[in-house]
Length: 227
Image 1 (cartoon, rainbow, N blue to C red):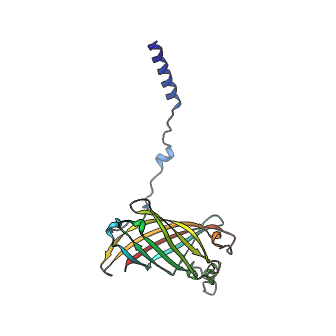
Image 2 (image 1 turned 180 degrees about the horizontal axis):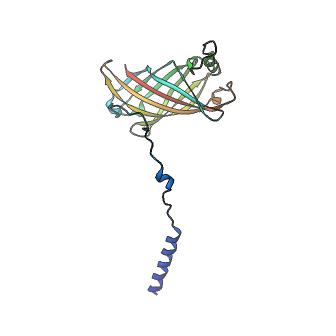
Image 3 (image 1 turned 45 degrees about the vertical axis):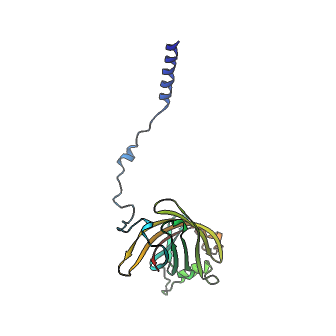
């Protein structure tokens, strides 16, 4: 009887192993060369430990900050532009970054596409600013409400985005790029980046060219200076 059970067990194991197959690496994958281009620009030797930074109020360094937005044209290429006028503040808690807060204001009429008409004027920028409701609502603002730490240098910042006179919640993926004391200014600097995608129609921004998409990607890079 024991031999019968042993034989049955062998048959079961053999049947199972016959159904398990492994897929060898594709020759194309094995031969695909690695890219010679770095995945990202290198960071300096600044500390990426938030706890090394002083706590308290910081002011956005507008000369070293950018808010870039991208939108699909014809569902194909990404059309990229930016806002030129930005201001903001950060209240930073290095021991518990989740307790930090941020407040940013963007001039809606500071749209910059780099495109000039035949007269050398930035008429296209004005058209987009008008679609954003810049005349009646000159400021675009973001006020954080909560921060979720997702890693040593990453987090999710949820806040209220006010655009075209309407306010809705938005969540940004945030990255901390480090901080250091800058001898030239004798103040501590912190660097962050953020990214989100919104639907412009949810803020009533529908008076725009029909050949552009509804989803708008927003990319933020900013340095803050200790007050």
